[in-house]
Length: 282
Length: 276
Image 1 (cartoon, each protein chain N blue to C red):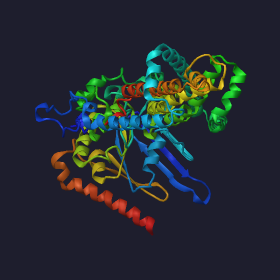
Image 2: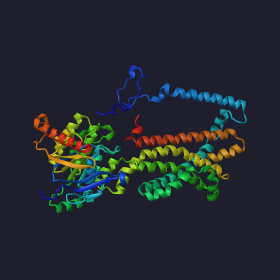
Image 3: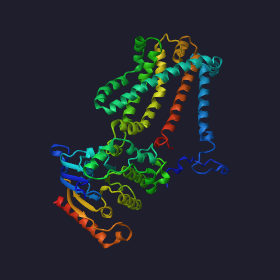
Image 4: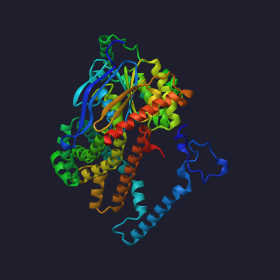
């Protein structure tokens, strides 16, 4: 009857016959538990670790041994958790600000061509200006408190959300609009019932881009504000000035994990919100 | 008959582009449709049949001429929800269940009911009673089991049926359909034609139906309006005097084919007239 019934059927080639399952059911053994899925990554990581250790032995002033990095993490977990939470807070709060501003402007630009003509050139210039260069000036302007960090993070997230959301709001198919125009739906009704839901896939595509960017923004802001007290960016600056290589690399590792965590959160949210959309179907 | 036609088009001209590259999509087109009639518009591509439909539905403004739907302008007709549109594609919202898809047009523009009653009063018609039971309507269209499903889970024919139910759910005075079955396979198309006729016969709605299938036009319509291109114009309106329901044996009978031949002949003549 429908073409989508068999959507969730996994590749069953490697299964023992006893574990055959009904088509269309979720597999009882998740795909990622199969060696074919996780083994390549493990081999890759082991190879990288071996290479690292070799390098650390040859160049002890450039690379700390992995053991030292791990010990730094385990000896002082509170330090990393505290700084990670500070950076995470800046990243998420800045992203929220950037998102709110970009979303409202996207709605305005898609509804009013005049606003679009005024806003888009400015937004484009803002986008092509390297924020790393702007950050010190913003620190001078807003001080060493949290504000410049939020502003920088917000700015770095602003443009991708604006462009994607504006495109998404205009992505309603012509014939759908015609159906609702013949019943004289108001602009607000069109926006709420048609345009905003149609924009969601585009918004999520933007979020996938800006969640990692927000961490970059927070770290850049911390590094630019040389007197700031905490955050992983600050920790890296301080540790590298004191030549504490294990701390530098431990902080970098925590930052990377944070980015992965944020991206996974977006993916989970996307799968829930866009279950109807083609992009979430395997 | 109350005297006010359901659709009245008077000497309408529609031009796309300007200067020497301007094309006359429609020129001096006039058409009067009495309430409750099923009218099919047929013609080669570029004859302006879809343009004419969009003009009636208020989606475009004519360059010249006048269009009335139950005595009011298309814009007023839309504001009062007199018009139901079934486009070529189902145009469903993929994030909403079938049931919510067919009820959403009723939820928007809530002030339409009062306007509609006023317009009905002007022309001495009864405004429709409260909105229909959409679950029941879906069930009658064979969609009762899929009311909670998403459009992406349905076949193409079912999606188009949902679009038709959505339009009928408005209880429109004028139903405007733009080649709604052209993307479907033949079996699906025939069963949807039957369902459309069933729904139409118990509603009292007027239908404007654009098609490029001669058989479809003869099967469905009371009047087949033959159009020609360059400039887009109406050649002839042919009354189809065949008993309803038109199904089974009738489709193989000589009188059915006679209408098909007549329409094909008119289309061909208009075509040669253009070429000459």
